Length: 420
Image 1: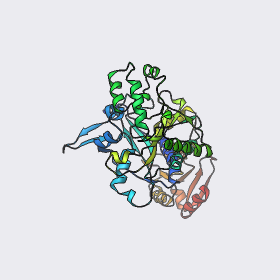
Image 2: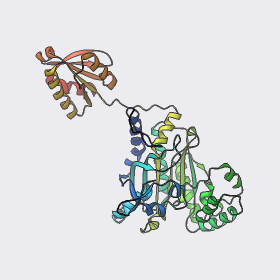
Image 3: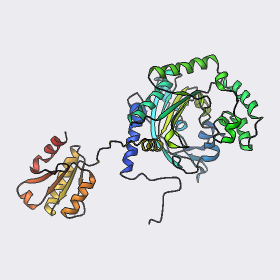
Image 4: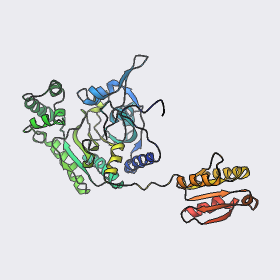
């Protein structure tokens, strides 16, 4: 038993299961890479105020879950709890919005950190793939991102997820709704922390999952009744474009998400097979976030999809991904001369783009062939002194069991032909 273990609420990705996570990341990002989104990578920690301003001080993320610390130099930093604020900060710092090609379309993949009560589907260290389209106010952009996420999930074979959709209004109509909602909430029997949230961001109370709170919200004013004509038209266009694309969604008037920066379009992908942690991804429009963190007005929209929860959704639906073996050829030398010759051939096979491994450690034939079997290799190359004296190696098909001699100089070409 090792002296150390992974910190509480975290996990290690270990082969062969790690291959599944890599495949999910690849699938979630593939539609983005095919739609003009460029890859961006930001630091794992940022100025704590970036999240306090952008994500919102009233959110659980900032008030309860953020890993904040002070450096030896006195800088106050935080491990990133989400990706949008970091990506927008990086885009502004690099002046990507001034290059003249708006929207700036970016995608990212990485680890995020929140101090939460660990449970299945909720970790203190988790992985996401995200996308941001910065600098354009266009319902087609909102629809595009929802469609791309839908495509990504379906490319993995998932079918039992639902898309929830809502509009949170804008700076014109939301203040009127905010005042009406605050008036309603102040009359309810709520705890002190929730009452404090009423004054900071009352929409977050609608997102409270506690049954005793939800019961009191019956009859609460609905945002749809307060949307201005521009927001109504914008939201209707998003809905129309999704329907035309064949994307099925559900209108959810209480959907506000857990971040303060959302405006207008907000959406969530939920999977009912995951229990209480049913959200596998989500996002929305955040037209005022750039100004909140000191940038110019840049209307933007984005989403983040959870890699961990997507893997759980695959397991809930009983979906096994078709992940190719990491090794195509496994070389087994018998003797020192064969060891040198085969090691050279392994290098040549790898240069030719063929995934190849080698029986290290000087094991005997029986043990080496067991390793070859476990590697999942399609072919095994075996050579001893007699084979090399004849200028050959033995090429064995691990599926059929057939074995034949192949001249040493022809091996790479022969294996390429067999794997083609």
